[in-house]
Each structure stands twice: as C-alpha cells, then as structure tokens.
Image (cartoon, rainbow, N blue to C red; front, side, top):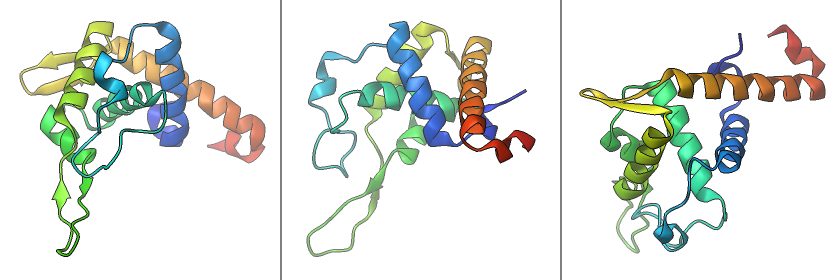
Length: 149
C-alpha cells in the first residue's frame, strides 16, 4: 500500500492540487488574488492556482504532523523578513490564509476539528493515499528501478 511517505512531497502536492481544483469542493476566496501569504513576502503569489497548492500542502501537513492547529501551520509557512540594515528575523505566515484553507478542507470532509487540533478524516487519508499511489506509478514508469521500493 502506497502512502504519502513513499512519494516526493512536491509531486504529491501538485497532484492533490489538481484533484482539488477538478473536484470543485475547494474554491479560492475573493481576496485570494490580492493577498500576501505572510509578512515576509513582498508580493502576492505569482502562480494563478496558488490557493489549491496551499490547500493541498495544508492537507498533507495535517496528514503527516496531525493533530495541528493554525499556530503550528503559521510557523511552518513563515519565513525570514528582509530588514534593510538589521539582520532578518523569523516571522509567521498568514493565519487568515491557513484558517480559510482549513475551513474549506473541513467543509469538503477531508479534515476534522477536535479539541487538540485538526485531524485528517478517513476520506482525506484515502484521497492522499490514492493520489500518492498514482504519483508513484507515474514515477515507476519514468524510472523502473523505483518499483523495488
């Protein structure tokens, strides 16, 4: 059985983002075209489908690190500020972006909110494992040596 741990994260996140976009369960909010993803960024994301990629990434992190809350995810999606003279410091990512993504994933049935944080539901786990299997099969076609692993 192929799981999320068996495939490269970037390939998995891109495949899950395509699936979320095709399913229609996740829709970018109206403000998604204008918002920055944190204090450490200067411009909004240049990828037009960044919302689906972020939702897929959040879903993967809930699967891997789960139970997690908005604060831990903000720390993960944070970065380093670029001060002009002083040394940069670490800052957290946008809580609003992560909160809205988690709420949409809850509404879609992939994540469940409990007292100790957000957990992945069986539907979310099945979605990620199924897509991980498809990604692994694509990788095996390109590199047959990976079939052993």
